[in-house]
Length: 184
Image (cartoon, rainbow, N blue to C red; front, side, top):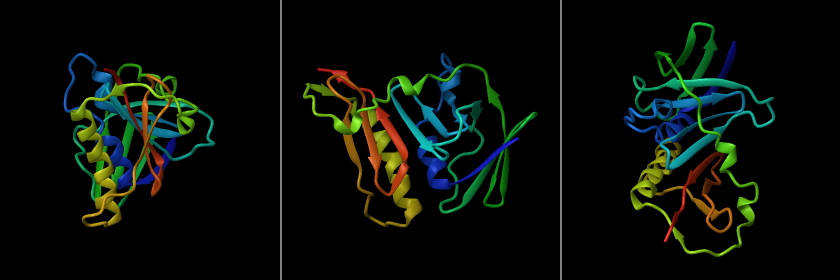
C-alpha cells in the first residue's frame, strides 16, 4: 500500500488544473499519482507537486477528485492507495477515489531540463484565459499561507525559443506549473 500526506495547498494547486469536464479525454479529469508527485493538466497547462523527489519512479494511476471539491486550508490530507482503490482523508472528512482508465500524458517530455537557463528570445505568447486560471493556482497559496491581499512571488521562465513557460513560487518549491506557448 502506498500512503503519503500533503497539506491542502499542494492538493488545491494541482486540483485547480483539473478541467470541469472533457468527455473526449476522460483521463484529464483526474489527478495522476506517482511515487514522486501528483500532477494534473487540462491539456494547456500542467501543475505538478513533487513530494518525494528521490523515490523510485512508479505510476500509481489517475484518480477522480470530482466529488472532493476544494480542500480546507492549512489541513493535512492523506492519500492511501490500496488494492480496492484509493482514499483521501483529512479535516474530518474521507473520500473514496475511483480510478480513471487511460494513460496520463508524459509531462517529463515537455518540462525542459534547462528551463532556469532560458536565454533564447522568441516572439511567443499564451492564452490569457489559461494564464488567469493559473493565477488561481497561485492564489490558493495566498489563502493557505494566510497572506491576505498579498500574492506569493512567482517566477516565470521559458525553456528556450518556442518551449513551455515554467512558473514557480519560492514559497512552494515543490510546485511546478507549465503553460504551453502559442506562436504569434
